[in-house]
Length: 87
Image (tube, rainbow, N blue to C red):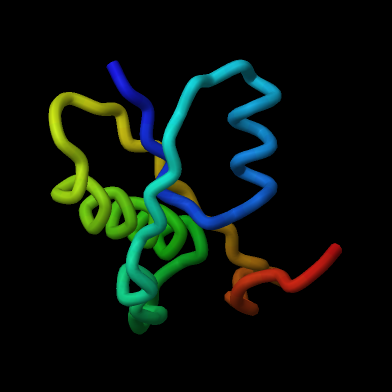
């Protein structure tokens, strides 16, 4: 079964390769990350973004596949800071 990485992250590609997976990259549309909802926790936000990325990518794949989608957001004491730009 094919494995699809729904990400444009070079680090995620590196991790998948290091783990020995044979995979293809399908980049989700930017609209899959549509902003923070009122009262949403960091964990809820990253889970929703990852789900939205997978939902965006899946219709573009023929046949059976495992879609790997994830997200990273910086958080400081429960305050969502957004995407980290560097270390």
